[in-house]
Image (tube, rainbow, N blue to C red):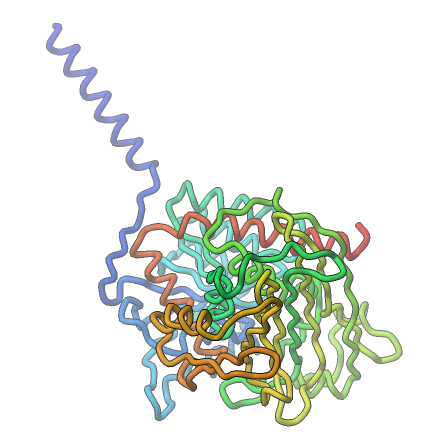
Length: 459
């Protein structure tokens, strides 16, 4: 009788263990093996979704399942992928398996044909899609912004909590970390003999300033970019103050506090403002190929002019360091120009400045401008530390300081940076985790931009 009771207890324990095992989320093990990553592309309304696939990766299977509503957004995405597949130089061999339907998200979750979801498109429901995909056990590589208002931010925090429980990785595509002058600005700022230490600054004279100018009409992969009409609806795309500023806030954190775990308590928004870019019907049609404004944009139209809140400025402190970031969207760049970036980090010994104007032929260029005596030997000795990671980088003496001369091959362009982000993410999958600082700093970043929007709107 005793033996029978023991057998029953052991059997019950084994049964409970089996049930618990079935209900516990199991980590998908990535080893870097060929084709083990299976991509699912969700509603690719933004060209960034295609840029993730501009090149092949041994670790990624060539079959990619796409779930989206039928329409121009999907068709334009497939055209871009086909363009990569049929180009003469280094063609890709993606096989796009497409599901078209309004129930695209539910179908994706039900079928679960991949282990990494890529999303870059309409931002109205993006945060919810991210959260639900994670809860279904999928890894997520998402284009910015992952949250466009404070309500989305709360959902995003829940998504990160779920990702930790489900043992999956949620990561946003921060391409600007791979722009060479930004990388070098960060590297030089970590040389105390050259840079000193980062100033604290003031609201009137911040320690860090980053300004980004973009254009609605542009060329991508050699062809005119056709914007979806919803791109001009801030309820679907998000306002400028929560869109491109995602990159700028990320760079402030990444450069000023490299690999430091940050928290929302480290942020204080001093002021924030927003304003519109205006375009006429002809410009709208040139950009979208649509003859009329859709109904959802009419709320933003007056006197037949579309007014888009695509511009914004945030003045804030991060751990006491004053920073100012701003984004401006013009309709079209003047002939021979393009998007531009300006950035300054003010140190106690030197300022590190990125300029990208006519004088630089619209190519980002880094300058070192001393604020105290900085002898050339000290700079040369420290340059060797930079060259260890970036061979070929040199310095050119100017009246105001030095220009950092970067070999041409480092200027690989914005489109190439998507592949670099993807490669980094694939390595994180093999590692089984993100760096310890990434998740808290993503949360801090999205708190900063969504809180700034709330302040700019007077809420």
